[in-house]
Image (cartoon, rainbow, N blue to C red; front, side):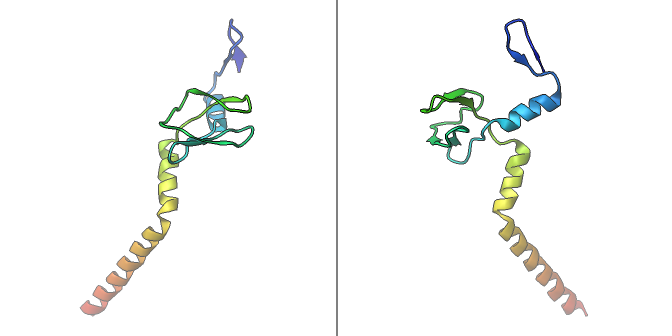
Length: 102
C-alpha cells in the first residue's frame, strides 16, 4: 500500500484490493445495508454499490454487492433442504426401478 501525490491510498496488490473489498458492508436482500460503526440499518431504494453513504452517526461508508460466488453459496444455503429432498427422491426412485428389474 502506498500514497499518491494527492495523499490518497493506492492499493497495489490484489490481496490489498480483496481485503478492502471484504471490509465493505454488503448490500442485503431488499437493498438493506447496515452502518459498520453504529449498526443502524437503512433500506435503500436501489443498490448503491460503490457510492458513499452517510449515516446519522456521522460515519460515511461504501457498500458492495455480493459477488457471484457469494450469491451462489447463499442460494445453495437457502435451498439446501430442497436439494436434499430431491436427492432422496431420486435415490428412492433408483432403488425402486432397480428392484423392478430384478
